[in-house]
Length: 445
Image (cartoon, rainbow, N blue to C red; front, side, top):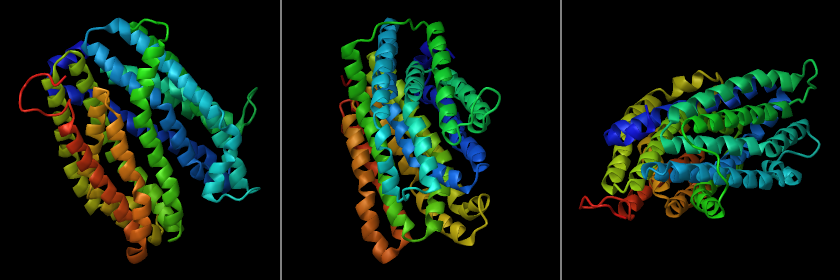
């Protein structure tokens, strides 16, 4: 479907056309970790434990690399809506420059990567810490390809061309799967890199995706341009709050890890598996958020505030329509879902409690992602990010307070409660924002 035809569709159809490939991308991305786990697991239990311990670090690196992508999406959608295709080239080049600057900052953290493992309690000299340091170190040094790939994807999403973005994600995943055993174990002229090979496989796969994505943009009429300082600052201004909020989300879970681990290893296992199971629902919510961001941005760029507001509303309605049955499925089948991954009774019991608590707030999660996306499309990301991060950070003190009288159930309640509050607060904030609902049909800008 051509990008220009999106604005001619009904808001619900346009959001759906953008969202479904993004949901598929989210599911595909989850296979990166599963593929790495498969090959690293063949190295032995210590490397696999190191990979698990490094998961939050890699998550934080990836989220930091998304900073230019958020701004690129918002600006590309705005320019596309205004019919200013030439300006998208400047946005893409400026966003790439921001991405490279972010990658340089991440690479500079390489000497300090041991601090992360200190926080996790990985003792110096252990095999787990050594392997983890190798993996995180390679991820930091290879961050530039993640940033560039994310930037290209952001521009494509701003254009509404999420199908191309999906194809690039699938290609990168396939290449990562092919490179994993070669770089981990070595072969021919390629020396074995161990667990670091998994990180370099991801970096190389994303580099190839960035190059292919640049070619797709060229075919779409986005021509190379010089970066602009003002455009780069705008991209950074839009992207920093969202990326910072998501980065804070990951850091909060590092802090929560100590509380959860105090109740036994089965609770941490339950959290990890629970995240992967509920992750499917999250990817769907995130996809509708991207749909809202793209169509809100394009309609505002075209000067049609009423259609922008209708797009946000349609995205919320679609998200809720999908999350209501998801709530029933996760609530009723939490235990058998966990038994697909483990037969340990303690882990199954802990995970069932966690998943049922989170299932109750899936609708709120949909509202959070949709209206965060709507704020991204409008370019007003600071308030949304502050609300999202503030309430996420509140999970830590809430978990400490509630875990005393309620045990691990108090931690799960703290997580679910903050999700409910985030969804409600972002909904209210959007309604009160300059780009939110109005009684008249005029353009709010």
